Image (cartoon, rainbow, N blue to C red; front, side, top):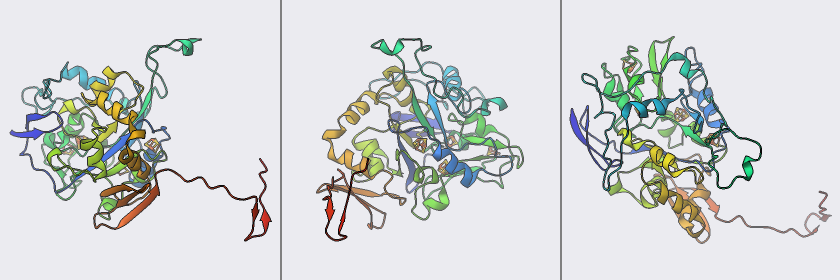
Length: 376
Ligand code: SF4
Ligand code: SF4
Ligand code: SF4
Ligand code: F3S
């Protein structure tokens, strides 16, 4: 057992292996305020990577409706119950991580879902929190009724629980981009990774008798392109790129800007201790206690920064760029009313006006010598 530093819980913690960081770390930011649960991302992943035998039930990318939806069923509540109450101190997380709470003889605190838990990717879809909806409830103000959509992929964690738990050392984290992969030649289907991953993002294939997981679309990432789930996102809610540790954050790196500069994008269940690399801009309308349990203590400030976006040209510019290009954005600028993005070689890959211009065309077009009529 080694000791590593986890910046998301702001303290050291035990981990199975020495803490080495990759050259750069795959990351994704999701704006939950913009997700419409269209599931295009889920299907983009499914048709690209999991249409084979034994993969029928797999959703490497899924979108669940909170507070009740979950794939597999109850993935977070079951582990939160096992872990028990934890709290955030003034400087760091004061509770136990899933590595610190591991039962004697085990490396990670976890559980293995039942087969049936995977059967309904979004059971409880569109069921809202706050009790049943009765006639006239919409007139009750203030009320607790809320729901939001949570898109989920593997976190390509800095300290992956799946990797720590595998007795075969079949799971590895790539040095070049931090993507976590299962070596299909080495895997013998022991399933310890499934038990250990708190996000339940490794899945067993009964045909190949190995476990499989999100591969971070590494063949695309190697070409400088964003993942399938990001490229196809209808709501343009995803920023895919690379995140730095806080002390190396670059303000012009889109992911660093959201995570470290504006502190508007927060990790999912940071208290688990994996230093996950998927981040969420929290929904502005859900109860703070629930969101704090899910995203840690930065929720209130993140929502404040999001509400302040109209007064923040850099943030608005970056939001305008989101989804504008399939190439990974390494740098962005906002100048003269335009937001621009650049790849890792400095080539410009997107140039969009922050405010769409309004063009009023004359009724008579001199060039084409035609009248335009508004027929609506
Ligand atoms: Fe492993 Fe789960 Fe982390 Fe993905 S999210 S790297 S499967 S522990
Ligand atoms: Fe699927 Fe690629 Fe998205 Fe992973 S990154 S969920 S493999 S589309
Ligand atoms: Fe949400 Fe985008 Fe997925 Fe649609 S494609 S469900 S908007 S993350
Ligand atoms: Fe290891 Fe998981 Fe395979 S524990 S052997 S990677 S099923």
